[in-house]
Length: 627
Image (cartoon, rainbow, N blue to C red; front, side, top):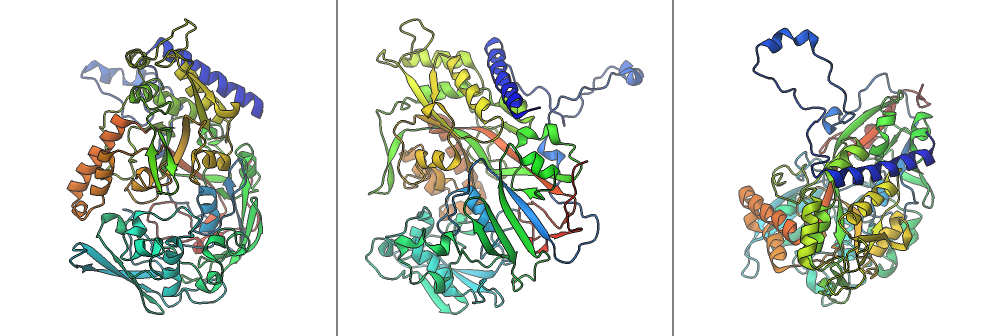
């Protein structure tokens, strides 16, 4: 089927979803799942009819449970070889190739091949001593900070930068000095840094050093935090070093745009950057002195692959694997003969966000604006009721994305509240809420005016990418139209990735014309949602804050929260508050599908897997092709 026909089919599907929804309030209810056990009856005659039963029809839905998380190894590895990795994107990667400065997921994929964390995590997303550094902790108790904690990190002796220099304690300390510097231009600075003793004074320009960071010797670093917090063990310690010998003479304000970040980045990972075609591709060569052992592969090539051509790239062997396959294309390609499909629940969710305020760059905090178009929570709640995300997951993604109810995702199984009572599809309830809130159709044209009887047009920002991006956006627009709300795409079109996040505020500048947006968050390995919804966080794109939310977010990462039961109760209450306040509403949880060419060995996507990229190997020089 041609791309244009696929797009037309998806758009027609979106329209049919809306029409079906208008006629049946229970449309898309989760009545059947592919992996549900068959219900047994108590009629003894059923046993006699067993051979006469008609086969159960395949409903076309998949489950993340259908997939393995480790590649099957078949064949013997050859010596050396090259592997090609596809970064699936409809736009170029930005090219901010340093963990301390990047802001977008595509850049993170590029960096991950040549640099890595000083600390590894296990399957529960907790730091271990298996990485480039080991650590111990001890209480830090003073009159000012009675609940403090000191981490002592010891970098392993054979950990080196790609230019041969050893990774030192001063390199790790330098990352903190850069991120905490008043001239820092990135997005990393936040409570995880200001919790360090002396960091706030340093950040304000009142001190030349950070008193809570001590370089004990070449390989030993001590960091003292004012308050011991659970998140310090699950991502709250910044675990990425910077090669000080390269960056020390570059002014902090100029680092992000420097050649050391953009053109000639180095790291400590298993592969080092050989060449970069800006925004399009990177060629890596093996780093023979990698601390975990010499990599098996001689070379890795990363290239941007469009969602519209990714299937062809995989079938022909142009790429061996991709960062994430568009799940809307899986059903048509599930039988691709030259790959093995791996899958796992993503540490991410998609959502609809409402612009409720703006970012105060001087105060470095969000400010709620009561006159914002989306300020009425009943308008936001009605828009949640108006969409059928269960049907979206089934019809657009064949069950490989599914209806979300909470902003804390299922992989955080100790804290995800599957029972939180979030709005589900009910257009009648949406209409009722809008009527009661004063959003009524004054002139009889089927479109509601605002509370003052003036025209109400809600400007919607959504990203391009993949065959269903446009029809999915249109489905939401039509669903809202079905309850009388006029929603239009900003600029009349979808926005490419970088432009989208620039306009919703990743650099602190909010486009005032955007009222709502469809975004997606990768949560990382830390359950703590403060980084996305804290009042002083630039990534708080809805620009939402409330006294209660701030109180709960602080409690969820307090010393008391080392008690899992206490932390569970706090996050349960926070999840319920987000359903009440609705600065955003989650739409879908997501499967990550990774097709891997049959020639590839030693690849796994388990969270906490100890298998490293240096272990990757291939069984033959050329990739297998689809037959």
